[in-house]
Image (tube, rainbow, N blue to C red; front, side, top):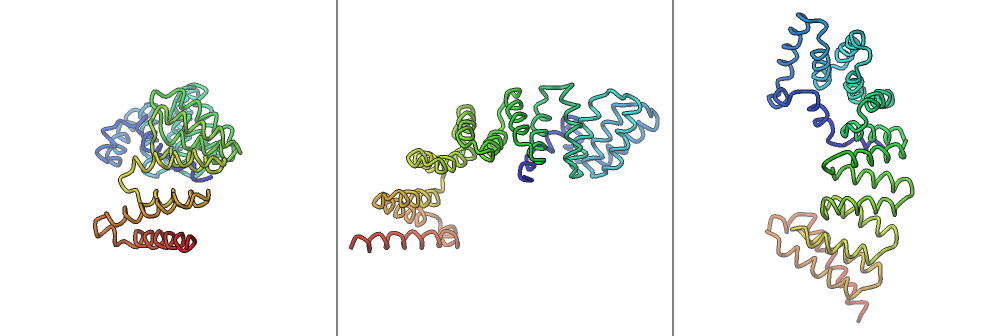
Length: 279
């Protein structure tokens, strides 16, 4: 389940609180020191405390960040932004379960906050609440003006892990209608087609992948293997031969790599086996 946590949210979420200039210059220590001076002069400056807490989070100074958030709680007990920052501190500490309550509090006040919905979906998935993850990913996609491919693929993974391959495939199809036939969406869709026993649909997806990629040899080999499984040996042999030709057309440095040489050897072996069977 930890794989669900590997999204590119950390930078994006941090930028919602931190001015982009501070991050762009990489001057976290300098900015923290500047906020130290502000807070020393104005100890009740809630904005400065929240800002410093988030910078401290990015620096890995989690205890100091939590102390700043406790100060904000004392000054403004009902400020939901504290929950938003604290949730990310807890997640960065590896404390996903308590972070969930903080995200709930933030989203109660900001129900269409796209990044928070996406982050809570990850936490739901991490703690094993797949239905909660699916609901939050769906809400995030509905609330966003743009569609993130990672949300689509992860929602599809959640549905597939729930034993709903048809719904997982439908999620990917909806994503491709908006984003186009991205390879990152086509490949899981291809795997789902195969899992559902839809060989022709899988072949069609492979054809789309082959048409879209500059390096075709691996995908031609995969198509040949699928055709062999379907008993379509003549077509498979043509694809194996096409894979060899694609390898041979590569520049020498790529053609002589171990992976390409191994693929060529396998393809030639399959072609020779097919010829022997016909003899």
